[in-house]
Image 1 (tube, rainbow over the protein chains, first blue to last red):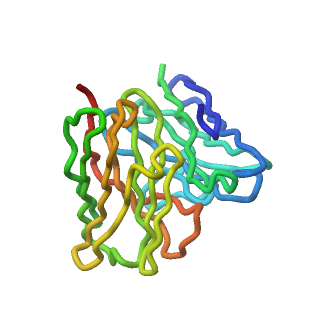
Image 2: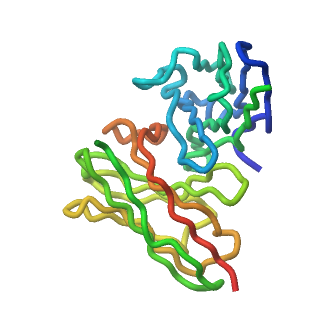
Length: 111
Length: 123
């Protein structure tokens, strides 16, 4: 059971917009800790695509955007492309556990 | 080019030990906290341990505390993970990961990841 809760899967047609939620609590996201998002293509290491809740590292397409409110965060992918098919993980810090924590991951399928 | 290269994985029996290494290049290794993150087959990511930069201090996930030990050799740009009393549930790909910023904040992102090394605990 992950500290941060993500839906197991989401899907969308090419060109559509999909969103992935990351639900935490008062000891992690709600305590003001930043949320980060990673994209993991099959058989590869995770890649940072959103840091500090909403900042895109250099080279990440602006189709990816992040937001945070209260005890949850979201990743949105607009103009969905076949190459976006991957697993997406959210990440933050939990002060009760004194540990860096991840969501369980969400598989995005492009129909 | 910023790069992390892990090694040391393999097959080990329950109760056994293994030592992982991660060699860094392309950045000032001593200035950044470094972590180990693992991923069991078909599962999500799990943070394992962190060792902060110059004024080093380790921290561990509850699931490995007392069994795993993280260390670093800044002169050799290398991060280590000593894993003792291994269990079947420790079977995973182990990644080393670099903190995004030099500020030793606990909610730093991981901006660079290695390719991972597989650890299998089985009799």
